[in-house]
Image (cartoon, rainbow, N blue to C red; front, side, top):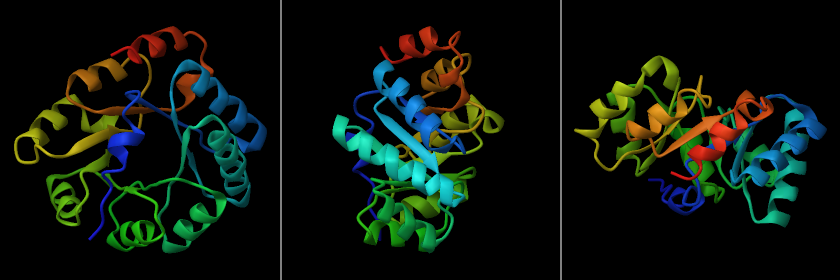
Length: 201
C-alpha cells in the first residue's frame, strides 16, 4: 500500500504546477524562478537524460532555499525513482500507473503521482491507497471526463496534465480539477497575466 496524502499540503497554496521538460540546467532554473515569483510553488522536472537529472538537482536545491516543492516527472522505472531521490526530488510523477514504481517511490519517502486515463486505472490506483492522481493527457480526456469520474470516485483528486495553458486551465479547474500543470505557457509573456489570475482562485 502507498499513500500520497502529502500532496494535500504540497498543492494547498495554488491550483497550478509548472513542468519544465528538457530545458537544461540554466533555462530550467530561470523558468522555475519565474514560476515561483508568479506564485506557483510546485515544479516538476521530467527526467529522461543525465542533463535532466542535473537540472532536477540544481532546481531542487534552489527550491529548498525558497521553501518550494520540486518533483521528478516521467518516472517510469524503479531506477528513475532512485535517481529522483538522489537528485533531491520531493515527489515523483508518472505518465501511467505502475504499481512497482508507486511502491518504490513510497518506500523512498517520495509521494507518487501516477497517471491515469480510465476508470480502471483510477480504481486500481485508489485500491493501492492513492488519492491524488495525474489525469493524462488531460486535453484529450476533456473536462467532461472529470465530472464522470466524480460519481464513482468522489475521493479522487486530479492534477490535469497534457495540453494545458492559460486558455483552457480555468475550464478544467471549473470542472473540478484540483491542480493544472502548465509547461510552455510559463515562457509566453502573453499568458502570464491569465495564469496570475488563475492563482487567485
